[in-house]
Image 1 (cartoon, one colour):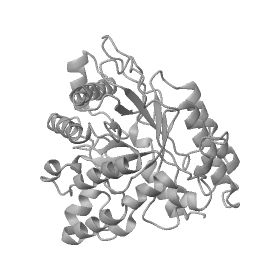
Image 2 (cartoon, helix red, strand yellow):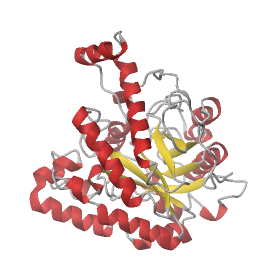
Image 3 (tube, helix red, strand yellow):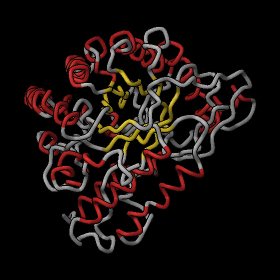
Length: 405
């Protein structure tokens, strides 16, 4: 299926890394660091999918919902401006998009043993109450129940923090990056504590992600002044990432008493495999895994589909820039630029592309999670794990064979 140019433009808008202003990691104060101890969760590799676009809505994944409010780019604006009609539509969508049958299929037909569940701070009733957001608490409860029924693990991922950790639409609240402002920071820690208290002891909990795709805004003069007052010199970038690491340390300390001993803490690499090292995260307690996301649907990674399918850049990241901490591939897909030579030639390349990415992940990472399980739009099969299986691009029966590991 060849995408129309508006779709690839949307892809670039959705996943562009330009807004993240990736820079070198900050240095941190010199304290002792305890390496994560191995657990029986550190098996060969967890195979999973994302249940994305469900409890944190994304316009490109569910365009019919957002057609109710064409000007809305994120969940907050959809619900704030759409009134009861939008709220009713979202409620119906959440009741039907992911059900118990889906988790049964994933476990028994899809070859999957874990799901990554993106949620926003509104995943708990008490934090949704004072916002336009609709609580998703009962759906999260249901996923844990279904996972335990079918023998799946759940990676609970905070995709949207109070004030937004990246200013992107997929945080539920685009246009601001204010998650570390004092009031928002305090509220985010309360959200994390409450999530850990409610779900931290669940048997099916694989781990807890403390923030998805953390971004950075261009520093203002005030940011530079704050950095100077704290560091003694002007370096807002260094101070920001030091503040992120301190947030992780505070959050991890809070949740430790509520998580079962085998649970992992997942920290986003912010599109940069070299962002975090053991030295940088020395104050963060617990079993830490890093989360890296890899997409090849934009940029100039390769000129034709065969070059893309070799995934040379991906292999280099996994073999040359791996840190001493375990890494998961929290998001990847089969999407490639439709302009790539050979894109429209049959169905062989999607199968080859998945096999290459999965085999690299199983060799070098602790888990992989395909984005997404499915999407609520037609004609984008490269983003749908279920449709890819149904088309024969992904063959779960071969997982664990030489073709995938």
